[in-house]
Image: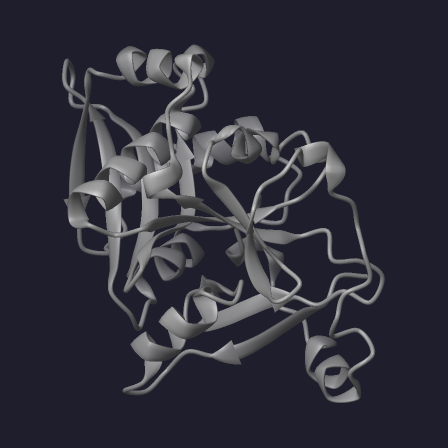
Amino acid sequence: MERKLFTALQGENAEKLNNSLSQQGFRRSQSVLYRPSCAECSACLSARIDVAAFTASRTQRRTSRANAHLRRRTTSPWATEDQYDLFRRYLDRRHSTGGMADMDVFEFAAMIEETPIRSRVVEYVDSSDNALTGVSLTDVLEDGLSMVYSFYAPDLPRQSLGTYMILDHIEIAREAGLPYVYLGYWVPGSQKMGYKSRFSGLEVYLGGAWQKMKNPEAYSADTHPLSNDPIAEQVANISLPDRRSS
């Protein structure tokens, strides 16, 4: 049984609250901030890349070269038909049985557009034919970039587009003087999440603090620190829809 602890993100202090709680492992979903608070484990660890500590591996440098033909285009958080078409192709191929599989165009628009803070849509376009190839909904925090949700053309596996988009966000953060790129949650032992642990400079939020990633295999599930808190348990029993989480 999955549980989440969450709070509304609204009012004149929304930006400040988002910055503060993002630094404590929370994630944004539209106008809500949430963090897993499961009774049995704390396997979901918030992850971020320390930009100053990051050095691209040989494979990652090869990925950058393979996608050199892509052009970055940054826009305001506004959903388009091209984005939704790409989103549907991505879900149908990669996550056809996931919690977001039945999202319609209106729910997609809400995911992109309903943001009370400074958010951007980062699009990646093929220079040869102007085809939309990748999209990231990205929040701009006081200490970094938070990749809220990303999707890309599923029929180009050799280009490693997901990895490339993270590499490009590291470059954006570096150019802007921002120290971190937030990647969402990393789950020890999860093959789908394994790509995150391959970035040098990775940190995970554990025990109330950010820690440099050790050997990924050294991490395992543990009892959540909020599990025995009666107030947190009452709040955490109210769950958010998974399909708007990343």
